[in-house]
Length: 465
Image (tube, rainbow, N blue to C red; front, top):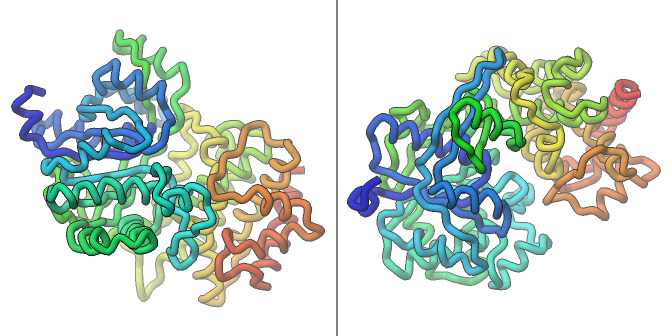
């Protein structure tokens, strides 16, 4: 890109320079560039001091890297991604990111921080007991997306740099509207009334749905890229061939012409979002927990096990689909076809997506991905026999994790270690799990939930004997 182009390009500032962003949002921007549309560029960095080796490699490569995609037949494709034009070094005060945020040509701040990074209760209120969140409310160097975004937006307000769109790219239901509500709640707590008014009137936060399986790249990805392209890439990413991005077209400033490269710009993302979160994300967790308990390392191995596959199939067929579609209110998504497509994607042996990656953060995923189906089914007077298998699988997983019997390190930002130990050491771990308000919110202690979990937990233990 020439200097003149750099000066006139509009900027999407992205927070969270992980594999998913580089295999998903950056790809759409690259596809626009490849079509000759270079009106927008991405500038990216992290709000936490992690991934330093990847950041160093990307800087050495001027932000350029290679994406490897692979389908179920094992056919691999390689694409050079150069849409990220600048990599921002991490600093505790986020000075580098702030410099980009206050530029009037920056019109979008997007982010991927994972589901566990939102610290929300069942009423979408911030849970201040988390140390990082209380740190940010106290005005210390930011450690959460709320503290970081507040700093960036305050600086933009002070520089009179104009309205900006906040674009959430995580698997959080109603991700844009929920984040903005929580952000305003955060700003209220720090009593910054001027910023509260500015953010209310000068930002939009469209809901979006993102989808592409993106495992953590292993060393052999770089070796295949070298063999296929002749280039040594120290920051490669890989993913499945499938990719999807659905966004509500509510941008307060300008946006890239993403619809020209396959992004679905819609009025209401909810039907697509619900299908993805419940069918894909819920099923993914089901397979990861069940597969781990049966001794498998990879997601596709679980799908090769007929018992595990049947659990996932029944969960969607028996309980999810009746919640999302009815003769009176049919879903615009063909849910049976989507279910089968998801299972086929998860069966891809060439992805080598690990159970460790997918099993993480259950204390966020159960309330986010699974609890809504339980709640909807109970409200409609239906049974929850198949969906109850999922939290039962996690309980069996957690019991073994607490005993040190899981082969990998389990990561869960929202899990309180004392609560996990109390559940697993209880005389009645099923009841203790069902009573946990972080997991089951207002349904905690529900008698029908407890009864269904008991039956499901017995099934799970019979399955993994």
